[in-house]
Length: 150
Image 1 (cartoon, rainbow, N blue to C red):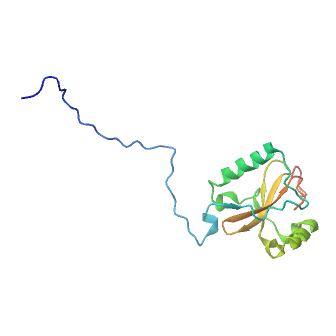
Image 2 (cartoon, rainbow, N blue to C red):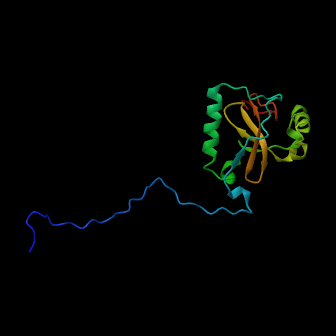
Image 3 (cartoon, rainbow, N blue to C red):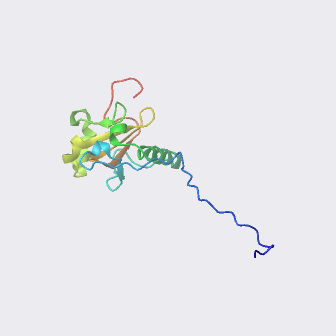
């Protein structure tokens, strides 16, 4: 006989709720660095060179936010007219000389430039999926452009 004080239990059903903003993990081809996501390295940041990192906190925060955005993109999605490799011939003499001083002149053909706003560029060495940050080029001096507003 049932106890009158006990209520009838309703079965509980677990429902899996999927987060629509969550994206599935994608396998990355280790042999194709363009299909991979960038990794930032800061050990080569040139703190004493012609393009110093003595920037206001707001600018450093802006750079950090932009790099965070790039972390969600593959190199194939990043590389284009605004973000591109730099040829050794296009880089100014001051930059080539500084690479020699830093013992990085063998990486001159691996230089890569991220365009920020206006003339501002983040320049570093790209090897595979790694981007080793070198310079904050505020005035677009490392690889001067003849185009307007760049």
